[in-house]
Image (cartoon, rainbow, N blue to C red; front, side, top):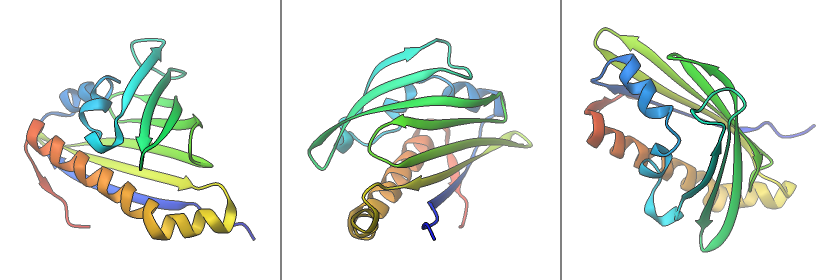
Length: 158
């Protein structure tokens, strides 16, 4: 039986209206703002623009010194409630990231749900246990901090 994908769920409550929050997340260039410097993340192209279903986002990054290319496709686009990006080329065997935005009065709940798998079978599982799980969690904690700086929010207990 094949192993199940790993799952990460992260929630934040932002003191901004739904449309404003979705607008920020719908601009690909803001990915650079939300990505830790240690990943050396750089967008190479976004086509077509503005972002919508079918948009391909190509970027380069470095993970632990290793240069990587990554292409994400926007597979679902349902403004202002949700969009899904899916890795079509990159380091993961699977990367499926659902971004949800839920209005709560004059605030917005941001929910990131990521399903991911690593290549290389048992070696990938070891890499996940040793470093990848921790790295993915650190990336989303960094995002939380940056979003707090940009929007003001309170962390939602998990």
